[in-house]
Image (cartoon, rainbow, N blue to C red; front, side):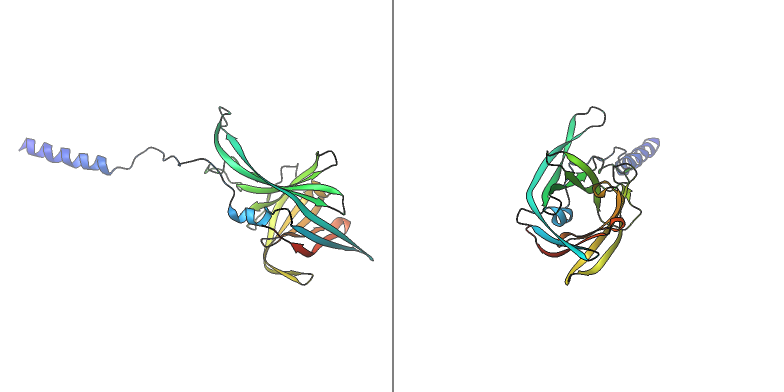
Length: 231
């Protein structure tokens, strides 16, 4: 009888052990971080893309032609915070643009947080930054202008001092100069280094990129009157 009871107990506890969940942390298949297609479709445009912009300042009206001169994709290493050795990869796009009115080059560059796979990370994984260049190919000013996903919230530090970038509104239908765009992001930077540290407002369309730029303190309001987008 005792042997029978011991056998029953053995089978019972053996079954429990099989059913108990493993205490080991499940590792992801890869730590690579790739840009979302939705983000690339907004900004990653090819040469042949251009925007004709207009800005009225009092009795004067100014016109600018902004065109894409190059599109580059890179694969970058993600370094382990301890060993500083590469353990994963991420991609980056760089859209090179030129403004005829200002006579200067600027780039739209994606920026990916290395800790996207860290559950404790609260900052968005993906940002887009604008970089202004001088004639010698040096960056003169830089600021984040967008983050993905573009949800309305209190914003994030732009990485340039105390300035903040935030999506303040997602506009279902937005019309400028007779052109209507859908799901337009209104993005505000409180102190934009690329606009002489003034407050700037950009309207960003999934269909046509940056379609409007306002800098209220200096009466600048560039709007798109015509564009050609090459994906």
